[in-house]
Image 1 (spheres, rainbow over the protein chains, first blue to last red):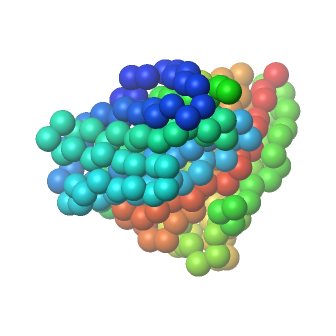
Image 2 (cartoon, rainbow over the protein chains, first blue to last red):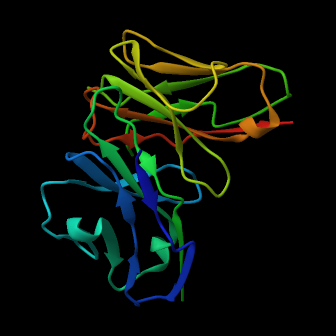
Length: 116
Length: 114
């Protein structure tokens, strides 16, 4: 069975601080994919990144960066110089590559609050 | 915007009633999946349709059913509504029926069962 754990329920930071959201996953698949989504109050899940299990290179996109470490089954997300607009719930998710659906298994999410 | 559209955005139903939620997938996508998100929780996979056939289902009872049409749009039907069915229902589209594809979500349909 697949499982995603986001141990941080809520994080509050002051604008311009850096913040890291943790994600730990469990899977028996050798090929799998990891995702991060942002969910503002409106409800839509906004896609941020997809990473496959064979690519352990870290990725940077503007103020966002991701650290994938297969050895510790972690896929952490860092926002540099946070802004109020970053306030949202962030979900980490996992999907395998078996037949039977492109099912995403989500963590419980981390509520990020960025204050002035 | 993802190009995935859902309707209605909000609705209120009475326990025991039936509801149909609709979703139009992003252009070029042939796979639609549905998720239920209870308040304060992560989305839970209900099922997926690929080329009009259900090809994956989560741990939901048979009163949750769906359809996918030739244009790849989809419906989620829930019969005999229960209070615990109150949730945000998210539709997602992607290309291809197996894992690994990027999945784009719509804004969801907020269902309240009273």
